[in-house]
Length: 366
Image (cartoon, rainbow, N blue to C red; front, side, top):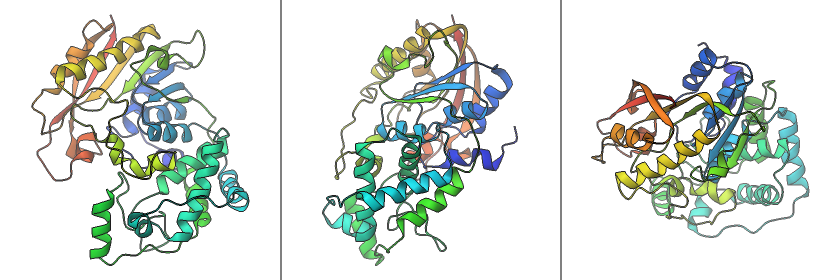
């Protein structure tokens, strides 16, 4: 399926761990879904499935236990003009009083003082109220621009040299910046907001879908957004067994959303990774809950794999999780490896390793 670059630009708003490209859920739903179908992603991540549903005019619900994931997904489901996003940022910076700044060497080297001051004012305003379409879009935009590389042309990120997908740990960052003699540059925060708003919010899509910050193991988290409109499609990619660093690897974005200004190494509401059996049981609860709110002819499509340092076989874990969940596996399709695209396993690895095969599992209500 050929993708329109203007219509799909918003999907790249904020780099985030992702298992499949937009073309995957979009091609599935474009070929198989019907008008009026509702779509569910119980591990929505950066909202790729939900954005695909929006492009096709389908309603959807995206659920994730990560505040970062829920915020990014929400920003992709609002209907807003780029000028309105920029005007909202300008209004906040003109009216919001100075906010307390986080302290420490990391913060002094990560952001120029004037940039950090503006970011803290924006953060304070959005923590106080983020209920409008303009503010939801602005919050997602700021999360995407919070950290990234220093460009050779116009700046797109607020930070000193950083990765885009995950936030570097403070001690390592300070050593790196010192070694390379990198100092944060003074930047015009509003100009970066304006450029990014024009890039990502220039489309003309109707608002559709809902993002929820919740744990999909709780049955109430997966209720359809419209009464008497059960889901006909569940398209998702759960975390792989052993991937437990979602929280610390997103600590800067979590800080912007109200979290601590230091790295939190707890696992939060993640599925238990203590053993393949406990992990499978966590997935089982999600599949069972999803079945509760799905139509009789609903489809469940899961892209799943594993990481090289876990001996457990990914397909065994997934098959076990689906037993007595209400779903029956119909087909299994190889989906290549993490090296063949922007996949979860490859994103989490800090060094090159032999990639494991990944699969698309199709199931229907039994």
